[in-house]
Image 1 (cartoon, helix red, strand yellow):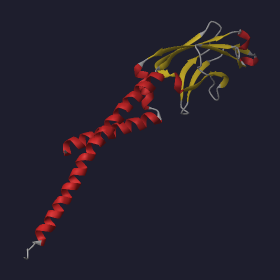
Image 2 (cartoon, rainbow, N blue to C red):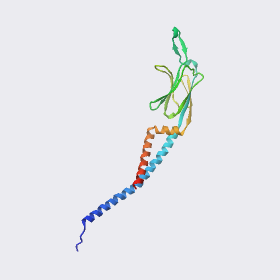
Image 3 (cartoon, rainbow, N blue to C red):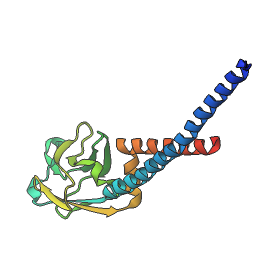
Image 4 (cartoon, one colour):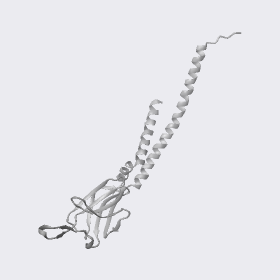
Length: 204
């Protein structure tokens, strides 16, 4: 007994089964992909909260006191061939870990014996500060008096006492987090994961 087989139908059925197999494997892969993306989003949020909390301490005020009047530099002028001493022009500069600086301003012709205070317009994350430099401001080149690190509320160096006032703020921590390389990487991973989830919802 001879059975005729339509090869075109067999070929069509084979291709259809193959398409169904590929479609089924694609459908089964998306739930796992979405699960991974949700995990990335969760880890990104947790990382952001933890790192932001660690970087939330911000410097808001610095007070510099000369422990001995003799340590204060003097500006020497020669008006009418007579030497005259004047008080220094104290200038405070904040150095960042990325190489940038912030000039907090100058206290012209001032003595630091009773203490001089610089209040910041915006808090600076302490973790981004590598040093606070006190210098005698000059039109050409300012003379560095001393430089300290913000490792405690108060520190002394070269006859000067530095008192730092800080505050904790969520906004400071979050802003500082997004300025770090790891913050940028985590943000990118979060964004990509969200896009993949949205794409999978619209496709399937």
